[in-house]
Amino acid sequence: NHTDSVNFEKIYKIVKKYGFIDYDTREWKNDSLKIGIIGTTTHFNYRTKKGKKLLKLMIKEYKKGRVDDVAMKHFLWHVNGRGREIGDLDNKTIEEVILELESEN
Image 1 (cartoon, rainbow, N blue to C red):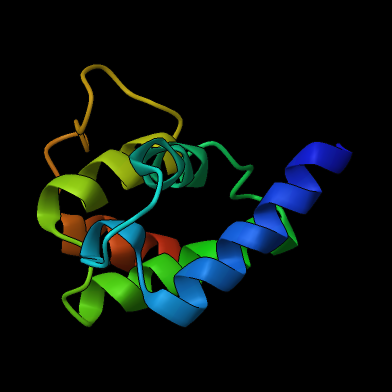
Image 2 (cartoon, helix red, strand yellow; image 1 turned 180 degrees about the vertical axis):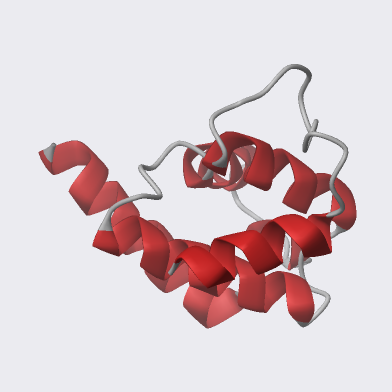
């Protein structure tokens, strides 16, 4: 839908320019905006062309050390359809899940 499309482009540009928001240590005028971006990042359709583009960027951010393990597990949990408990990657490591996702694309 249009709102997701607009939000996606804005969030993609922010993450590309500044890194994943958790990593951004700047003083924010409005912390709820920062938290909103983090929350919204997890709710796109990662099977679409645009979704795969953001997924690649998030993996790149993780590999650069700009996404911590807790945030990446939560992100991947959303990408993989929200399994049992938050952050549950079906007994796989983050690296194993990333390898599977990269081989799919």
